[in-house]
Length: 168
Figure 1 (cartoon, rainbow, N blue to C red):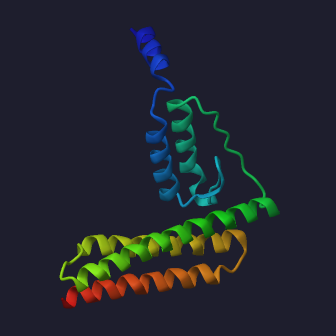
Figure 2 (cartoon, helix red, strand yellow):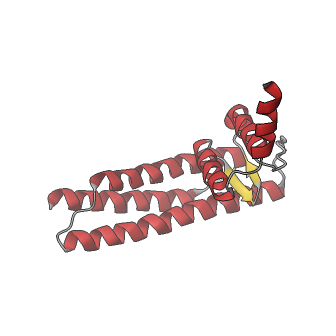
Figure 3 (tube, one colour):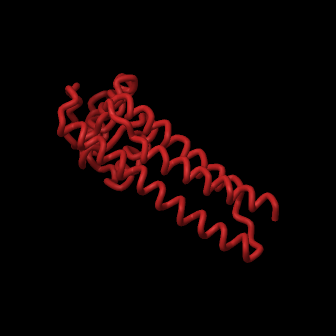
């Protein structure tokens, strides 16, 4: 009986769809405030290291990926990669939400109201990103003022859209 379970497990190992695994890993990266340094290399905040080991174990068990988790001193390369990663993440979020706000504004002008929950969700995403920027500002020992200003402007855009929708 035990051997059948092992055999079935081995037969299914590595059969998870790559897209499903990638989507799950993307969610785990967000949840644990991890920054992608480059493909497959992540900087994990020290306070998340314990729970990130569970992610590492899950990826190793559910796929044929070789996962290595190793503490690293903040080298110039690591800091530069982390900075590039958080810049890219905040820029993408800013671009996506700004476009969405533009579409909402157009819809509101045309008499259609976007769902308030959707707008509030985008506001939460901007707040979460600013928290992450603050976290990495401390971890990297850098001032990330421009990124924080972008998140503030983004929150203001979303806030204005929410106010316009409420007035209509």
